[in-house]
Length: 162
Image (cartoon, rainbow, N blue to C red; front, side, top):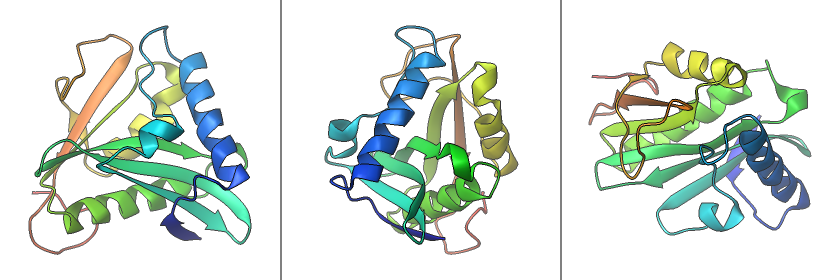
């Protein structure tokens, strides 16, 4: 598996971004889906990556800077055919490493509270994310789960926390 900067013009990438947005809307109450579309993923302060196995697109993920010290994981999605094969963990490790390289000391995320999102919440908990109050422009929402993790300032293993 290789993780590279996302090519927004690649048809498979466009399709997976659209699938992610459609799935998030379908699996979340109206007004509670916060996934980024292509224009949101292209915004300043957002880094976007894709995971590949040869020519097969396995997943996508993004990092959005909220401040010099705080960033948010966005648009993590694994292709249906690649689920359960470690793609999410690999993308998460890549995003955490990129956040550290950018000097981020707090990494947060918002995901759904519905059963569909339990595998994602389990993955985030496994790697040290803990529940937190809403951050940035988010408001309290029973359909959302907010999580955060403090990152060490010094180089270490990709998933170390302080």
